[in-house]
Image (cartoon, rainbow, N blue to C red; front, side):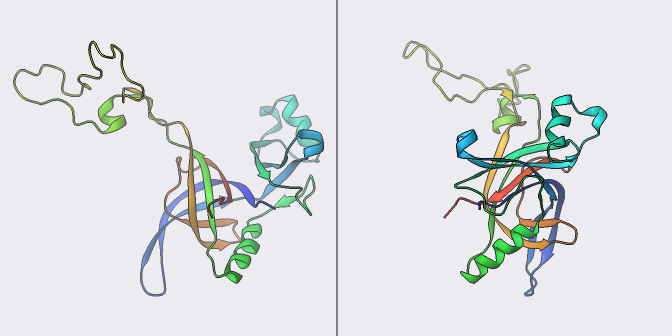
Length: 221
């Protein structure tokens, strides 16, 4: 089974190793997640687990969302994602609740192999709107001296003239900055707290505090 859960970002802090080393960690509220649907190759063409996280008020949910949750006798969910599986997920049924303990079992298996438990985290980065090249790409800007009038944060020349007579692909320009799907791979799991459904991961993850995330077993070898 390809282990994965849904959760939300709580915030960042630091913990200390026995030797006194400070480790920056992101605290994730990971689950509990309800299995809304089990995708099968025979019916859907692929194997996956459809998980739901965070209850949604019925009056705020559509009829389709209510009906989909009603099949497993549950409340509608705010955040629904699928965790792809290489084969049939043994021992997982619709209506079952998955908690952070699935990562605890995986960590024990990794420790038996003398390896650390690493995960991939998928989220949506903070949206910064339409931004210029200085903010979006870190351009230096033009000189702030005499003769440069209201052009200090402009990009300057961005393409050749007669040959090839058009702007080359990939030129950095102003545009939408942030609000994009970001996957951060191979992050080390430092600590697991099954009592409070918390996962402490070394490093930063995309999105603001309170943002929804998908946490899955890494596919990095």
